Structures are given as C-alpha cells and as structure tokens.
Image (cartoon, rainbow, N blue to C red):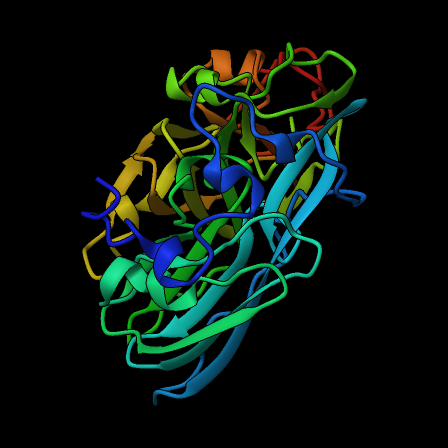
Length: 359
C-alpha cells in the first residue's frame, strides 16, 4: 500500500530507514517518542486570521517557501500535554498561497532535536508521492524540490513517512491554495481551519502527559477531534471567539487532515452561501449548503454572509465530536439587530454575547 502511494521505501532511499524512534515501531506498541520530553511551547493552535493575503496580480511569479518540521510538547486542553508533530510549530501548518502557473522552490527543514524523519506530500503537485520522496529529511537536515502549480484549487499537504497516519494525527498537515488565474471573488474576511483526530493512551481530560496510542488509531477510535490542534481552541472559553460584523462576507478555508475521519462541516446559525466541495475552485460553487462533507485528506472553501448579530459555531455535525471530543470554533458577529430576519424574542432584547448550549 505504501509503495502504491509513492512512499514505500522512502525512508530507505533517503538513508534514514532506522534509528529515528517511532519509524521502526509497530502498530501494537505505543511509540517511545510519544513519551519523550519535547520542546515545550505555549500553544500549537494556529491563528485562523493569520493567512496570506489574496493574490492581486495577473502574471505568474516564483516563490521561495520553506517549512520546518518541529516536534513540540503543548497542551491539548488545559492540564493535558501531548507531543505534537508540526510544520512551523502550528496546527494546521501555515497556508501556502500561490497562483495557478506560479513556480515554487520549496525546502523542508527537519529541525535539530527532532526524533524522526519527515517529508511533505502536497496534493497540488504532479510528481511521485506529491514530492514526499524529494523532501524526505532526517533530523537536522533539509531537502528541496521545485514545481509549477498547474491546476487551481485548495489542497492538503501532509507528512507522508511510512507511519504517515501517526504523523498526521499528531499535527503534520496544512493547506496549499492554488488560486485560479482570474483570482477569487473579493470578501471582507478570510479564516483558515484544520480538523484532525488524536489518539492518546489516556482518557480525554485526565491531567498530565498523554502518549500516543497506535492500537486506538488502528481502530479509528480517537479521544479527541480537534479544530486547529486544541480542544475548543478558538471557542470563547479558549483563545476565541473570532470576530466579524454584520454586512460582511467571510470566506473559510478548511482542511481535514484526518487521518481517518471525514468531517461534516457546518456553521450553526448560518449557511455556506457559496461552497466549493473538495476545494474545487475551478468549478461553480454550490449555493446555500448547510453541511459540507469533507473526506480525510481533502479540503473545502465556503463563504458565509453575516446577516444578523449572533454567535456562529463552526462544528463537525457528528455532534459527539463537539460535545465530547473538542471540535468547535466560534465567531461573534456584531452589528445592528435585524428583527425582520431574526427576532429572538419579541418581548426581550437579546445579545450576541449570550451563551447558549455548546451544540
């Protein structure tokens, strides 16, 4: 199977088939590296507002892009730490934004102090393993490739070493956005999110450090299903809520790292006015979609109109993942009330800041 993906034997080709911790472990054992001490960081949850600006040019260009694989320790929820594997120390990894026809000179650096080899498979590349063979790097080393972005769309990139499911679950995925030559329609705000599931060897919520559970992953039974790497990372109770104003149109870029679960991505209190299934930006958008099915290893791009003041909850509508496993972000929309569109109570004024049930 790994050979069919273009990654079988990759570690051996790169000269790093053994000696790097987890890559020699079997699925029946918890990886040693999941318990080893890693560099502590304050957080891994990527800021959804921190993404490259829309492209405003008519000609192709060349980009020099570098990502650094970093193995770090951070809280997956308050009082619970986990060893994440990341690109540039965040989950999801930084969005890469280019235009159709652009040339990319890409380098992956595997940071000193890491225990394992890493690489990058970009779904926006024509080439063996999406470039994973070319970018395989041992700890303390770098590898590079060059490619032209031939087709438009929103695509995942992810680590693709032999234990690729373990690396992706631990946080090694992100989005590469290839804008069409004509660009994207103008919007007022853009946000960037990534969903993935995590399999730990302790009960979710139990304080202390959690190791990784390979057996639980093989059963596809995660303790956590997360949006941007932490339980309720961008909800009001954690690092959020995010903000918008009535009258705006907000574009959401969403990548499902998986490695195993599809997402049922839904904005509670709103709808996807325009939605590009699987990130297919060359196709006409679907209109007024309530929930987008996003397979693991795929993306979606959706736009919402901010019509009334409210708190929008971005969820996976497999709702036990929200209520039990951490899959939630919130957007507070402020502005003048529009009672002809929504009147929460004719007899009592309501506030967008009022807390409702988590679902």
